[in-house]
Image (cartoon, rainbow, N blue to C red; front, side, top):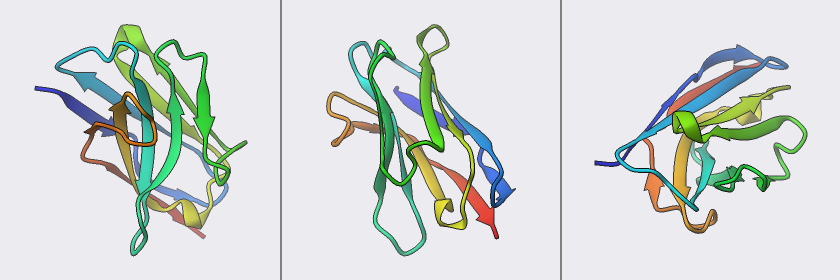
Length: 118
């Protein structure tokens, strides 16, 4: 059974940092993108960042570019999202994802809540 389990969410003040982690079990995602999406209260889910299997290619939404960085450690089956200069509008449930197409991911975690206070 494939599982994507996120951790690292929590409450942080504006301007602060958090690092999210996602551990994958049940299969290896060779040649899959790994990524992060988020959904804020009352809003649609949106793409945050994605990374290729090799880790060479990364993609970040304009809203987080320069503040968030995605990375992965295939030996640990883990993908990370380093978040800095956090803003209240970054408050959301963050979901770890995997798929062939990072705009249409196939596998989803249950999410971890990030709350940024002003």
